[in-house]
Structures are given as C-alpha cells and as structure tokens.
Amino acid sequence: MSFDFKEQYKTEILPKLQKDLGIKNAMQIPKIEKIVLNMGIGTYVASGNKDFSSLRNDLALIAGQLPKVQHSRKSISNFKLREGMPVGMTVTLRGDRMYAFIQKLIAIILPRVRDFRGISSRSFDQEGNFNFGIKEHTIFPEVPQTDVVKPHGLQITIKFTGGNKVQSKALLDALGFPFMK
Image (cartoon, rainbow, N blue to C red; front, top):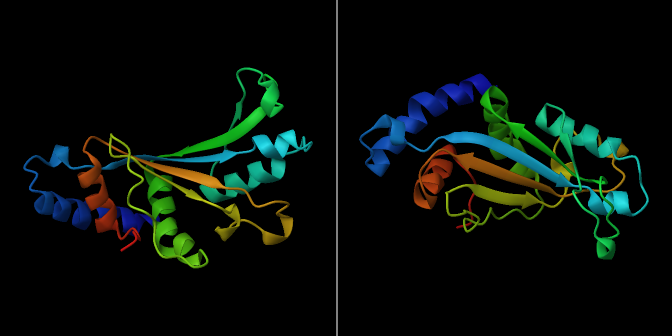
C-alpha cells in the first residue's frame, strides 16, 4: 500500500512540483521530513483516571508504533497538575510509516469525518510546517469502537524540509490534501 504511494511521490509528484514551482536544483524541492502525532491526556488523568493504557494502545494502533508518554515538568496548582504526572503522548513517524500514514490520512481518514468540507489552509507556521487537529481519534478504523471510553483529540504536524508556506502548500496540493475551497 505505502510502497506505491512512495514511488508515485518520488517519481511523479516531486518532479512535477519542481517544474511547477520553477525550482532548478532538485535538492531545493520541499519534502516531507516527518509527521508528529500528539494526544493530550492531562484532563483524562486529572479527572481521576490513573490508567490511560487504552488511549496509549489506541495511539499505537493509529501510528503503528508505541507513543512516548510526556510528563509534566513542574506543578501548577490551578490546573491540578503535579510534577511528573502524564500530560500527553507523542509519536514521530518517518520513512515508510510516514508515507503509509499520509496516504491513509488523505484516502481514508479525512473522508470519514462527519460534515467534512476540507481543512483550513491557514494552519501553516513561518517555517512552512502544517498543523491541524482532529476532534475525535475514533475516526481511525484501527481503533476498536467498543473499547473507547472517551473520544480524544489528536494533533497532527507535518514537518517539511526547507521551503516556505507557498511551497509546502503546493506539495500538499500535489499529494491531494483536501483543503477548503
């Protein structure tokens, strides 16, 4: 599944993008460096649930690898946060898993969102990286619907090598990313 997408990406999409953007050197073409998935679990843990293994398993199923649990660095009494409490999980995807995830995201996941009209194209930062959120992690087909206690949000960051907002958006358009019209 991902091999065909990776081949198409390298043989068709990148040369077409180079021609469209007028880039002479092939090394200056923006490429996807990595995809980072983040899930905040601070409210889940603060509400009294000490066992967040179901969320960890769900994120592992979504990404295809185990997430790293992030712990708080300091205590904040207003948020009922203590030093060392788990507050989030993160997964970094590179290589074949990254290509498989982005293909699955474009072809399967985003069309499953109810009343989906596209993703806002205003979510690029200064370096040209793209950030967007998904309100419920249950839209992924890998997550067993019977085991979900509470739907959680998921933040996805697509990091590009070099480039700027215009070049990064052109690459995502060439991949078929569903932006709002």
